[in-house]
Length: 189
Image (cartoon, rainbow, N blue to C red; front, side, top):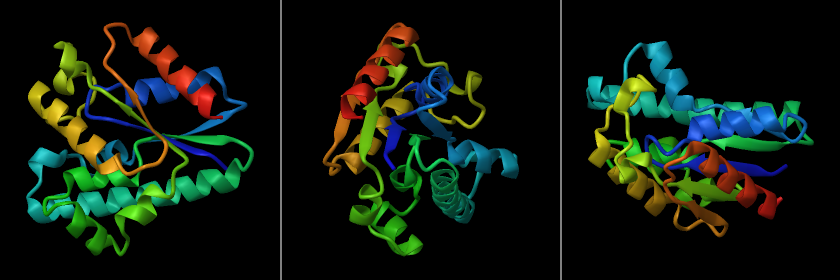
């Protein structure tokens, strides 16, 4: 079972691209949706509206939901590739006390989390091109354009130790970015 993570800062296209690829190839892929949006929807809030303990609690919930979804979809679709809108590593970028404390709190480590995934595709935010719409297309976003770029850089650093990390830059045209991601995925499958 192959697990391919799409990651990157806000506005990088993770959700739209993963949904489009799965819709185009339902026989090949199953989508593991972003846990953060699900958790924030359930809590009726977002990261910047929580105090420190609330942020820790939300990140714990996301980590456990992400694990549960990955395992459930792997069982239910053993012959399909899991296409993930973010992976467990992403939570470390938003943990108030830093990545090492995130691993400790969750009883895991960076290497173990990296090993869960076969391929990681890091995508640059459209904020790098001045095209970021903030929370207009996702109520969970709290970062401004500079924050979106900084989050993307932090995620690239956290995923940097993965042996099969691929990069996709920002594109002015979403269809071109989808094609670039699809080409990368085809090259690793």
